[in-house]
Image (cartoon, rainbow, N blue to C red; front, side, top):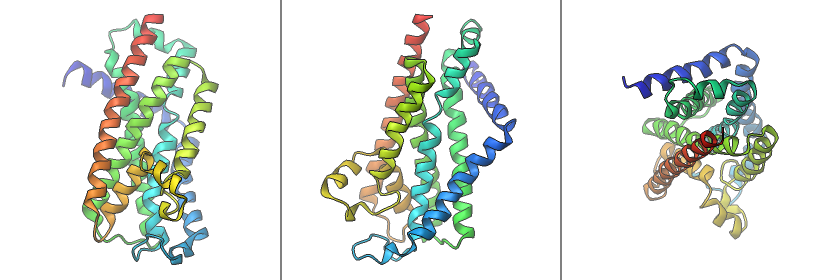
Length: 260
């Protein structure tokens, strides 16, 4: 393994160790998406009967599962930058910058940790959906595509969150920006409701929404007759955006280094 890979793995393990030492937080990160899945699944169970709702013969629980996976990935990743702000506040960041730790590893570690978290959360959500009665037409490769979409979406917003944290260096600013983005993106998508039932302007917005891209990739991958033409461009767009956000986070990190 290269030095960068070793340092990245060590910093990822540091974040995982810190998480394991907070069992209450671990429980929250796993229980919250389960509540969304079961609560929304029961509350909107009959909406699939609305004419024009694109459930394609699926139950609402089966329709909702990809949406909950994507929302969970987004909401978790949006807080990734808080680790940097905490490290800045207690001097850990400065000590790391003065150490032989590779700078790229400091960015890779947080993103890898968030991606690992998203992977576990996605597995839990799919498991709960199956336990609640959901059955998907194409569990493979649909579930693989669901994991891929969740991880790519996580990289996008974890990198963005890191960039915001490094540029603002303020917890309140990060929280405000995260909330400003997260909820509108969730509701301006097909995560919970078919956007074809929404106004035309909302349908247009959804086509440019990374959260909706992840939902469509997952939902189409799990469908009996996937719309490949809708799925692959969105998966590619997610990958391209993940690269772009990672580049932005790297530039933000360089700007932070120059200022200290």
